[in-house]
Image 1 (cartoon, helix red, strand yellow):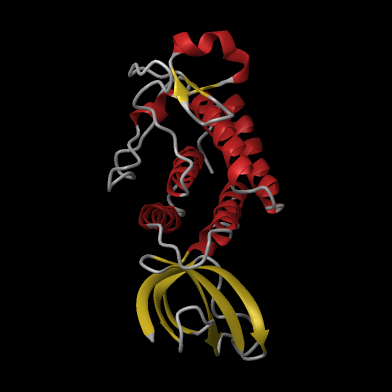
Image 2 (image 1 turned 90 degrees about the horizontal axis):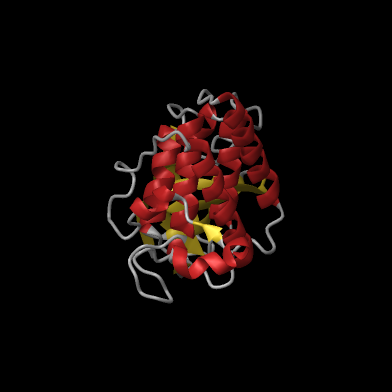
Length: 260
């Protein structure tokens, strides 16, 4: 059997002197591994790298076998990451996340945003990058079944919500949550304006306010808690790459600087 799909290279491992095992995150087939032949130049350097985007052809006897890939690269994200420490940290963090997703599960919205971030990486300033990370982590939780419902209070049913419970992930109103204020997360204002169920979640997402970086810090603090709780229990690299992002935000807060 075989299929063709757009995909992003998320991992490259040496198989032998003439081949690598590629892991691609594909638009319609999710995360998939396969052998890629003739992937070295004359000096031994790989001709394909993490962050490459292109058209992939996978073929194998059975869907659950390793199979083989052919791949035509159309974009190389890594070229734009290593001259900026924040972009490098964001790049590593995003790919750490994608690599722990289950194989062969499709995540169309997550792929769309992941693709968008990779394509636009060269144009993003630091504020743009952090906004995209906030959105990506929120969408990741939602796609994996741990999303938040901002439509109403889980206790009283009123439409205005203010807190999130770290225990249940449910949202409650200010009135219900005040007695437990120290034990709850305050919901970032911009979260309530998002609809992660919409087909298009990229173009309309913007954040401009005097509390810009405070909002982003709060967003990342909450998603970090739930990502560690539900997804990253055994992912050792999560704290390292993400901590560098947090350090950048803290530094930018002091300078109000969006340059990268």
